[in-house]
Amino acid sequence: MATSTSTAPKKVGKLSTSVGLKIQMAVSGLIFVLFVLVHMYGNLKMFNGPDAYNGYAQFLRDVGYPLVPHEGVLWILRIVLLAALILHAHAAIVLWRRGKAARGPNAYKVKRGKKNQQTYASRTMRWGGIILLLFIVWHILQFTTLSISVGADDYSALTPYDRMIAGFQPEVWWGYAIYFVAIGALCMHIRHGAWSALQTLGWSNRYREPVFNGIAIAIAAVIFIGFMAPPTAIILGIIP
Ligand code: HEM
Image (cartoon, rainbow, N blue to C red; front, side, top):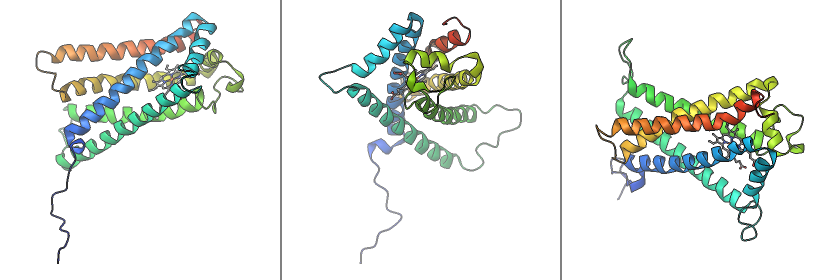
C-alpha cells in the first residue's frame, strides 16, 4: 500500500527559492519607492498654495475619467500598492524564518562589545518594517478614511490642503513627530533595501559597492528632505 512519506522532497516553485523571494522583495519594494517618489512630488505642491495642492488631490481622483470611473485609477493604484505590500511582507517573513533556522539558536551570541553587522541590519529592517506598517495604518486613518482628525474637529469638512495645515500645527507637535519617526524609518529601510537589492541582482561588486551605497544614501536623503519639507514648513509657520 502506498503511504505518503515525510522524507519525500517538497516540490518547490521557482518563486519560493530564496533568490526568487529576494527578487519578489526587490520588485515589490521598487514599486513602493516609485510610488513614494511620486507622492513626495505631489506633497511638495503644498508650497504652491491651496489651489495647486487641492487641484493635485482632485486630479488623483479624476485621472482617466471618463475612460475609467471616478477614482478608478486611484483604486487601481491602491490595489497595486496593497498587493506589493503583501508580497514584500510575505517574502520578508519567509526569508527571515529561513535565515533564523539556517543560523541555528546560537547565531546571535556574539562577544560583548563586538558589533554584529548582520544582526544590526536585519533588526533595523524588521523594526523599520513594523514601524512602517503601523504608520501606513495611521496615515490611512488620518488622510484617506478621515477617521482621525489631528488638529481639527472634523477633517471631512476641510479641503485636502487645510487637512495638511491642521495636521502639522505646533499644538499637535506629536502628529509631526509621528511623521518624523516614520519617514526616518522609511529612509533607513529604503537605504538598506536598495543596497541589498543591488546585491541580490548581482550588480554590485567590490568597486561598485561604494558607488551603490552612495546612491542608496542619496535616494534616502532626498526622500527624507522632500517628505519632511511641507510638514516642517507648516509647523514653523513658513506655510501659513
Ligand atoms: C511627510 C510624509 C507624508 C505626508 C505629509 C503625506 C500626506 C498624505 C496626504 C495628505 C494624503 C491624502 C491626499 C489626498 O487627499 O488626496 C496621502 C495619501 C496617501 N499616502 Fe501619504 N503622506 C506622507 C508619506 C507617505 C508615505 C511614506 C507613504 C507610504 C509608504 C504614504 C502613503 C500614502 C498612500 C497609499 C496614500 C493614498 C491613500 C488613498 O487615498 O488610498 N504616504 N498622504
